[in-house]
Image (cartoon, rainbow, N blue to C red; front, side, top):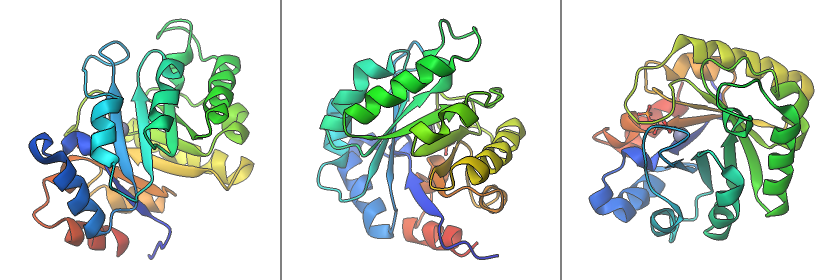
Length: 229
Ligand code: DX5
Ligand code: ZN
């Protein structure tokens, strides 16, 4: 099986922060296609990562398109900032735009958030946790550019790939293919050389890779291996 479209997006959450710029530069030289920035606010997820200032340092000097994966309660509070520092894609969570994290999905608010992000001039992504049934995806898909399917629960790098997320990936691929083939399908969490073949076969266009990428001895080699799948 050969899939020319697949893009590799290293998640800098797993990079060496003592030499962040160097790691980003090495990833770019190795042939990475995008940069993935994991933004955590300590509310939507039980962890805090980094904000726009560190992100700006990380991506400035790189020509790669960057995606801000906003794992935050208030995506609209941050979208403009991440667009300003140069992110091309701003991705928010379906679970973050509900009245409360446990209440039902809210298509109207999700569309409003997507439209507000678009007004900032950014491309829009929506992300779904592994236990989300994707009920808002058919309704929002024409307002977005990217779907980010989580194959771990967000919060940290280095977790195990979850099959329920993989089922969501297949479901998202079928919705995307039917409703809006131009939308990119990204997968995030536990992606490595073992899990990559099945997510590529399921239709993923973008493979977000944290630990498997930055823990590799040779970044170019892992990209080559992914692209050869
Ligand atoms: C998890 C993040 C991921 C994470 C991926 O909250 O959204 O982007 O960095 O790391 P790995 O590839 O190690 O699962
Ligand atoms: Zn992420």
